[in-house]
Image (tube, rainbow, N blue to C red):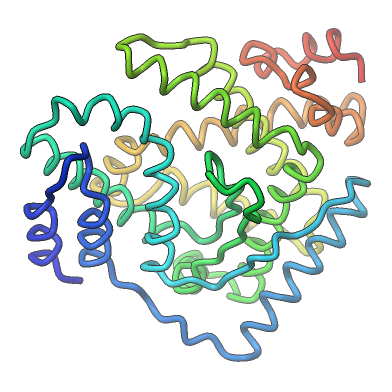
Amino acid sequence: MHLLRSLRAVSEASGAGVVDWEQAGVAAKAGTDPGSLAASETDRAGYATDVRDARDRLREVTGVAFDLPETVELQNRHHWIDANRATFRRVVAPVEAVAAETAGDTTRIVNTGSMAFALGFLARNVVGQYDPLLLTEEPDADHGLYFVHPNVVAVATELDVPYPRFRRWIAFHEVTHAAEFGAAPWLTGYLESRIERGVSELTSGAVDREALAELQAAMTAVEGYAEVLMDRAFDDEYADLRRKLDARRGGGDPLSQLARRLLGLGLKRQQYERGAAFFNRIVDERGLDAATVVWDRPETLPTDREIDDPGAWLTRVDP
């Protein structure tokens, strides 16, 4: 890591935008050890086998036909920063377009530093990612599936679990997200519309609470269904993995905990927990097929209130 180089890159932020995205990427990478991509042929074959087995097992468990993204990559942390810098930029573009008119150099430097910090912190912690390419301007672009190999190795060591077993768990988790979006071809457009509505209101100084609530409920369903489906699809013992990963989500040193709060990762943990509780209740009462009805159409998604009251969803949808 080169922290002085990172600070210099932030201080040199320029241009007409609210964020200098080029310098944000430079700063994030300067402050982040890329990690080794020296995976053996056995490792690479292991990832491919895990992803393929996850796809076949999830098809069997859910009865949902879905395809894997053509793009399945092993990344280091710098690759992840490059891929997600574009995503961050797409999401905040409407706000940038309005705020750029009044943004000064100081604001640009602060925003560039904030983005660099977020990208760097996440790059050091993300182990795998299913990327539905929200808000892309390329309608035919394929979704992506990424594994941050040095983080997979590091977290397996940190949790004291065998690396091949942890790698397989992560592959199953990310392919579960691919199954969700395969079961609900409308989901990408639904999420995009709520993001666009929410951001559009922000540019005028208002808050579209309905759009944000719908986005929150949908993402809680996405994370919760994945948690429940993982427990039924993974083809090995998982109780210790689940326990250790849950502890890791809420752990870390004080600085890491602060960073997680600032980046809203506590909210993501809440999504996992609320969503899993919702789907466990549905599965216990009606079975997995009833839970999968959530993905039939936008109207069958649970509302934010129904996530905490699964009985209300069962009454309304009657799967």
